[in-house]
Amino acid sequence: MTERSHVKLLIVGSGPAGYTAAVYAARAMLEPMLIQGMQPGGQLTITTEVENWPGETEIQGPELMVKMEAHARAMGAEIVTDLVTRLDLGQRPFVAECDSGRRVTADAVILATGAQARWLGLPSEEKFKGFGVSACATCDGFFYRNREVVVIGGGNTAVEEALFLTRFASKVTLVHRRDSLRAEKILQNRLFAHPKVEVIWHSELAEVTGVDTPIGVTGAVLRDLRDGSTRQIKADGVFVAIGHAPASELVADQLELHNGGYVTVQPGSTRTSIPGVFAAGDLTDHIYRQAVTSAGMGCMAALDAEHFLAEAGDVQPAPTGLVAAIN
Image 1 (cartoon, helix red, strand yellow):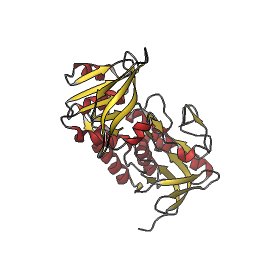
Image 2 (tube, rainbow, N blue to C red):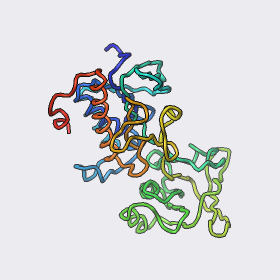
Image 3 (spheres, rainbow, N blue to C red):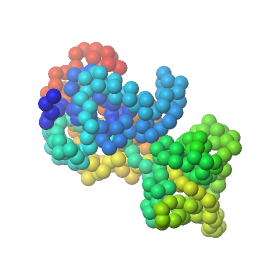
Image 4 (cartoon, rainbow, N blue to C red):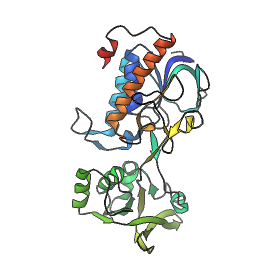
């Protein structure tokens, strides 16, 4: 098939927001192209059980994303395995340049690049990253069978990571800066009831200790935030689970941002500060950050893009009842 150099609608990113946008846009006959990015499927591909997706009592995150991609393809969306390295939103048509050398122009763009793991910024964390320090329990948990690990954080991400790691590790220590967790109560109850889990309160990670030959982690130095004292605990692995930062690097100097990098959208819509550019999912949502809300925003973005293109004369207006039909 001949590669297209121009599309009506380009979707950048492939999590729930991107794939849902592709489904709706394809059904609106916009012939969308979706470029998957570095992590096709987004954060759900490194998640295990998903228990809050409507219609699925429990489903594996990777399985859910495979289904969503297949759905988008079945509707007629073109799915491209590539990475957008530069995006010029200075004028229409917008221009995307990819890692493969592919260059695509588009009349409208939906940004659904999601978020990336946050790090603490410690020199020792950077030194042992990939050698005992990780931000993905589902990626690396298998390597810690019958070993002791530490999880840093207090939200849903941290508690989910800790619970997952109990499948492999002999002991999981959760370290949190406060005296209570921010995670959902059902997750907290599971954590506190688990015999392999210990929680250390009022503490932060001060340093990751380890050896150089072969490189690996041997422990963690914790700082008590009440009196400044430190202590070292044994650890074969350290998992940093302090949330995620929006992946807005492509548009940081082009679109209006808020709250440390989230793309600003107009209230009640997915419209950004540049007409014809829309944003959905974790890239713009610093409050809910759920798969189902991301999917909902993907739907909104596709409908917003369809309306924009119709008003701009780039596509025929949707027939009466189309919006209702694709809801």
